[in-house]
Length: 72
Image (cartoon, rainbow, N blue to C red; front, top):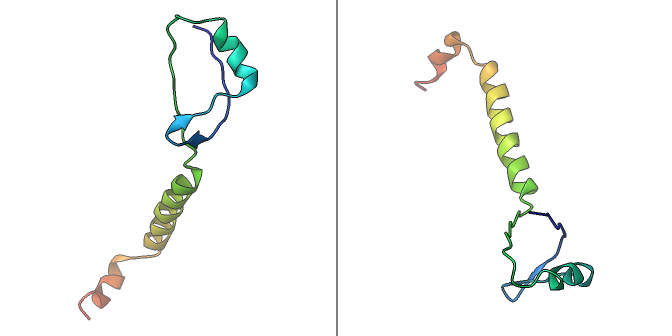
């Protein structure tokens, strides 16, 4: 299979195919296609990485002798 990649927006639950790509699709009517949707979730992923990293860094400074404060 040949790949055609483009970016677009979802409007009314429909993926809009750009005009420059439509001509490529018109020449391939009645052929099987595979659609892969990749959502940009980099903000969410960045938040998860930040929380994990800060937690790890905080606990690196914790020692066994600090456990005496856990009961107060």
